[in-house]
Amino acid sequence: MKKILLWIVGVAFSIAVLLCGIFSYWYFGATNYVLTGVPVLNYHQVNNKFSTCLTMKPENFAEQMKYLHDNDYHAITQAQFDAYMRNEGDLPDRPVFITFDDGYVDNYEQAYPIMKKYGMKGTIFLVINLMNTPGYLTWDQVTEMSQNGMEFGSHTISHKPLTSFDQAGVHRELTESKAVIEGYLGKPCTYIAFPEGKFNDMVLAETKAAGYEYGFTVETGRDFPWDDHYDLDRVPMFEGPVSFKHFQFRLTFSAFSAILWKTHKYFEHMELTNTLAAHIPQP
Ligand SMILES: [Zn+2]
Image: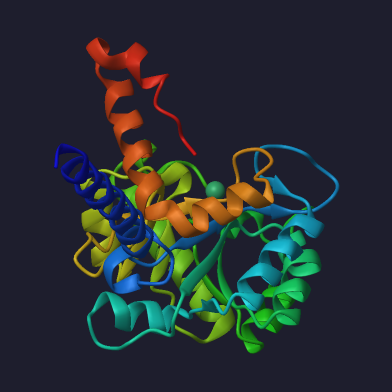
């Protein structure tokens, strides 16, 4: 009798563990954006020239775009993201919003052809003062990409953190960069990525007043309609060599790993838990 009871408990326990596993995958996995949010991938450079924490090799980037394509992910546009954030439209299955910061010339030379090959689109956040300078995009390249489905946003005029300016300076960084991009492309510029992800209350108020609808940081996580539209998380694809396994993990489980990242950050800021933070992995 005792044996049978133990057996039943054992089986029930196994089933519970299995169901927890299935639930976790379903809940935290990539496919249910309604439950797990939309991953906004954040890239910078795609080239073979440098190997800084911002650089990804073209072959690795291609492998990632191929994976998205082969696994039925859909790169969404700014309009689709906007509709989702306003609860005004369904997204395709497995949505992913691909973004690049800083406007490196390799976004045009390397990333763009790869994205075209796999039917992917994305948004590049431009730094106005760096445009047409060595290593960065030209307005001709931006215009060409804009005509072929790539989209753009502001990464300010100077790329200095907006928190380092007074109100007039913030106003200028926000409104002038927006006006320049709109002038070249003839399309509204309503997306911004804050340099170094930094903002404060004044910056947020100015961002709204300037007519931006969405502001992105460099915090890790996915985005939901109920999130603050000016404090949006992304999934980093830029600290050092992001291996293909990292990419897959971050893409699939960023909803879960974001919790680890946030705990890590939170602990890091408090003296008492500072040392503890080092032991929380940042996958
Ligand atoms: Zn940047």
